[in-house]
Length: 268
Length: 247
Image (cartoon, rainbow over the protein chains, first blue to last red):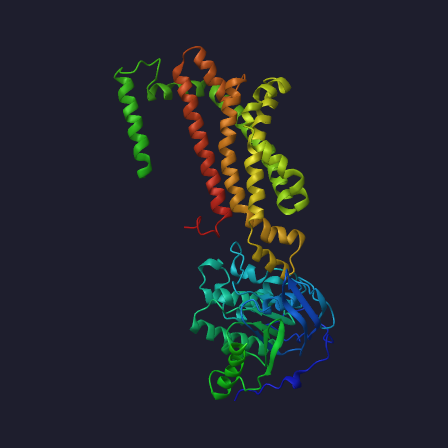
């Protein structure tokens, strides 16, 4: 029987998780403890267009949050702010009580297009920026996504799904406490997407980082997330807790969640 | 294999036409006469000396101009400040045919080694500068962003992303520069020199030794081809990841 997700049971004080320092390389992707996210009065405009206005949001450490919305609704901007790649015009963004910094080992992004370096082999792509014991940690991460046997390949010989697995491994290798997923499965075919959703869920359950998934796919959000946020007109239009047992594949309850979000999007 | 067919046929035709006396040997020597001339000059030590002199000039000029071009290209590619400082000037100078400098160079350096090395260096500088600069500027911005998120900065960003990302373009510049290197050297040695392959052919013309003149031309072709194969091999090694260079 799958475990029932209880968001409150894994609540940790914000930013109170010291990173474990071990002399030995970890045998696999090890739980590191999630990072809490807090947004307060966040606004961002591009020219005359205000993509986010006065957004307030708190994300529990270790939870899985999906952000959905129409194209250009500001969901990617939100994600980029969490990564430190973009700054709000007004308001505060805090990760574990601190401002986001680009390149911090605590935050990683998995991009839609993978963004593997074509001139580095798979293992070296995963090891990118790891520093200490890069090789061992990269191997462990590849193992976790089931691609240990493709370590020595060039990225271009991999299939789209395999490339995204490598991108996932790279995002996980540093044992981040916040993983930002920017429509990571958007370009995959339906079957590969289902496989990847299961994999993302599995690694998240093992490592218990905080996950923020930006997606167009409401069904995907319902399958993976503890909580679905709908962004419309620069605000959080819907904040829905999904308290269903995992793994979720099909079922009336899942369809109900999906339906609620879709009805809201279509109404807007 | 097939690519050798036409050269061999051409050589045969040349041999037939010249041996049959259809073209006087003073106009165009036969292939075997050229080979004979080459053999004679090889044994006298003239040929190795001239080839060595030309090669050293080519290599020195290439290294100096190439390194400078690479450094300026890097600086302009990486920093907007350097770009706005130097790129405008360099793009302007790039339009001046460097061989137009020959009269000035002779005034500055005479007809010694410096003149030839200088001209080669100037000729080589621009293609390498431009392609390094352009290569860095056209690196996928998404990859740079990804690298920043992964915590890469400074030297590691340079070695992991910037240099390999610009490498295809840089190597295009290198191959182009190798062609310019030969061209410049031939012109420089022919116009103003007292040694080297270019001088050898010009000197032979004075004595109507057309076989030596043709030998010089053949030498340029052979050396050019050797260097190009060498450059290709480097490309294959450095760009093994690239779909266009893999088998």
